[in-house]
Image (cartoon, rainbow, N blue to C red; front, side, top):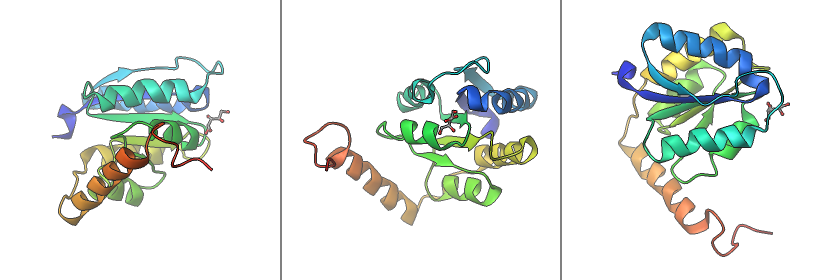
Length: 161
Ligand code: RB5
């Protein structure tokens, strides 16, 4: 089931080396994916990559995304600005599994400066192979969507101080 997924993968310069390792693994396992860059360790701005990958997941061109920066934090914050994106920062396998079962996370983020490649590959594999559990978790996902609708974007500035 997992191998049928279409994946959007991206990183900034801080995540470039780990992204290369993850891509090699995805290739070896036969996943269909698109590499949205960046393609070197030359400095780039992580929101630009996050936006491209998140839009590709949001519009359904890809089923899920993997985003890597130095910490996994900035690139995930940016991706989560898009409605319908549930980006989860996972540096351990328990969180990776739970982010799928409970949160139906559609983007995985990781930090190359935080996690080694061996554990990162385990995190990716578990995250890709775990299904959303549904049930009571569906109601909570729907509440997140409700928050996006009411408070997301630039709609009335309710979220501004
Ligand atoms: C880039 O130096 C670094 O800030 C970025 O990769 C990421 O860690 C941001 O959250």
